[in-house]
Amino acid sequence: MITVNNLVGGYSNSPIFHGINLEIHQGEFFALLGPNGSGKTTLFKLITGQLPIIKGDIFLSGKEISTLSKLEKAKKVAVLTQEAQVSFDFTVEEIVSLGRYPHQKGLFKQLSRVDWNVIEEVMEITNISQFRKIPFRMISGGEKQRVLLAKALAQEPEILLLDEPTNHLDVKHTFQMLDLLKERQQSMGLTIFSILHDLNVASQYADRIAMLHKGCLLEVGDVDNFRKTDLLKKVYEVDIKLGSHPTISKPQLLMTPGYHQAEPCTRFENSFQIHQTKEYIHIQFDHPLRTISNGVIGDGVQWLRHFCNFYVDKNYNCSAPDRDLRNWMTKYAIPYEQAVGMMTAVQLKDVVIRHEEFEGIQMLAVVTAGTGNAVDISSRTHSKVSQSVGTINTMLFIDSHFTDGALVNGFMSATEAKSKALLDMNIKDPHSNTIATGTSTDSLLVGLTQQGEKTPSAGSGTTVGKAIGQIVYEATKEAIQKYLQRVQTK
Image (cartoon, rainbow, N blue to C red; front, side, top):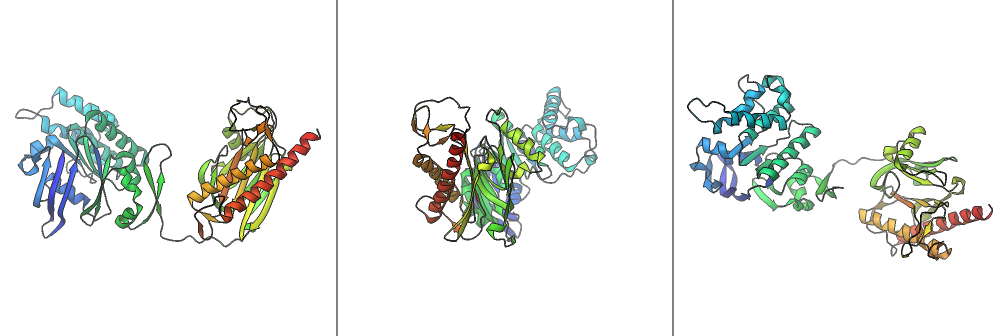
């Protein structure tokens, strides 16, 4: 659709490009990326003929661009730039109608019924119909950008060139515009060639990307190129960490600031407070911890400060536990947006709290345990949900710095230690009569201060992994013993 061969061009005395090659395929969303000054807008101006080509060729749909008249180019290509300037005091409707000029026939270029149908459609889908009689100069920058997009779509182009199309838009309208363009691409085969600054937006919407650096194309390919963080650091000169989107299979990028935020130097044992009542246990840290959890709220990998275990009756109706936890935390002035929340039917006075140090690493374990719902996860016997008191809730806090891999290791080590405690105490699944591996509603949290030297692994073969196993194993055994003694004395 667009082919660039050995292109040399730019401004008269100083070409920016010195022989680049690029091909944009028909019907794809192609994003051009790079820092300011890398040549993105210059390349657009060369494609549209606003700047002269010193050497090389640019083809549109197989035809050399220099052989196309302005009218022929207008039928094939529409351009949306960052500037929202209009010299005359046109209304919004008049601006959009200018997009139909390449398709108008006759000496006086009158708008036909077909033209008006197109104008109405593009004004509707860009949500600007309510501005139709308002002068263009009277609307906001974001509204102007949507008007100019409608004008570009009114051309019914084969190719849409977008130079930072979301520059003046808020988050809502940014995604509305890009969703509209993506739908147009997929349903009508529109080819989109867009300059974008937001790397995460490019990852979500583009089919392929190209990275420009000082007039050179460093990489062209699909969005998995965003996983090359060393390349991104070279292009943008910023420390970039790779992540992933939670619901779509696209890489997402986290920018790390260059400054170092110095945290107050607080010893681990002085960095938290524990508040315990009959209704709940609340551990609050002075600074957020890096956490991994399957709690009722605050699950996944996050940065959090508040950690709660709430008592519920064994007959509690758990139709909306997350809502109930949020309500309870609000009642006690605990910010649930910054919290992991768990539930237990075990009396909270039977909690086990262990604060220990292993080879210079301090750990705090907080465990409540009941085994009425004990299950063997490997058993083929399908048990019904028991009404007995159950759930082993484990919170483990570590004064150390783990990588994400070590964080997962630590979660696994704690789980293995809990299962070993059940094995050694001969806790059985009542339905299969085999050794239980946990209960049907266990919750586990591992939280890290992320202080000190980075630890790459916390598995069972490491010192810190064995320390996790030891403290969780002993705390779980003690909590189960308290539970069994209470059950036996009833």
